[in-house]
Length: 262
Image (tube, rainbow, N blue to C red; front, top):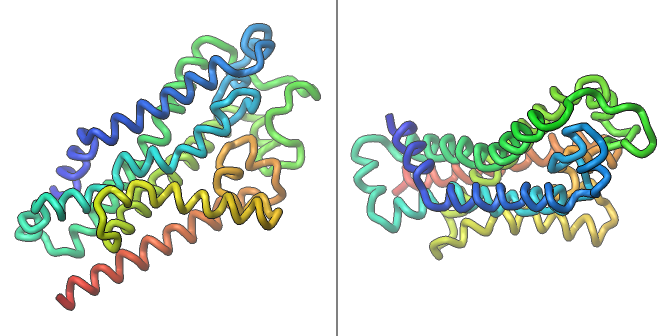
């Protein structure tokens, strides 16, 4: 019951709608900035999509801003409960461990929705307007690097590859929300937790740029096209997701122990 209540509350939260508006704004920006030849002369939906056509501004921007969207959508749920004195009423019905796990679960779902829904809406529009057939093998129409992990998959079944890329976005967007939530357990100042997922991803970005080890940057490997520019890009995606989930688990477990000791 608590999980359902929390989910409904987050879906009505102002941050959820602001995050969706940001995502929709970026995919519109992508649509109007892609290379004109792609937009007007080639009848293929994948030459428009955010994350695939890197001639548009949205492909880079969407995945860079994704942690901010996730932070807005769900990261402040614990902070709001705590500072709004709602938490003590909730804990009369469930124990703290149950509350933490339900909050993280609903945060993951809502964060995932915020990241995936604009891309699904974009696909729904372009898939009805343009062809979804396989792209011809041409040097001018290579969206996925030939040496990339997804090249043969995309060339043989672009729709299923697109759906898988949405699933990856959902997973990381949900993870970003959970990182924000667990940070709010330890950050005293309200609303700071919204920025933590973005700070985390930008740390990987700066490490990549200073070290020259580009695939360690989350913003570089999240876009479906760009993740294939790096050898074994899929393993870097898996690495960061596992590291992020472990960090969330450890932080949540430590908070649960603190509550039991209190």
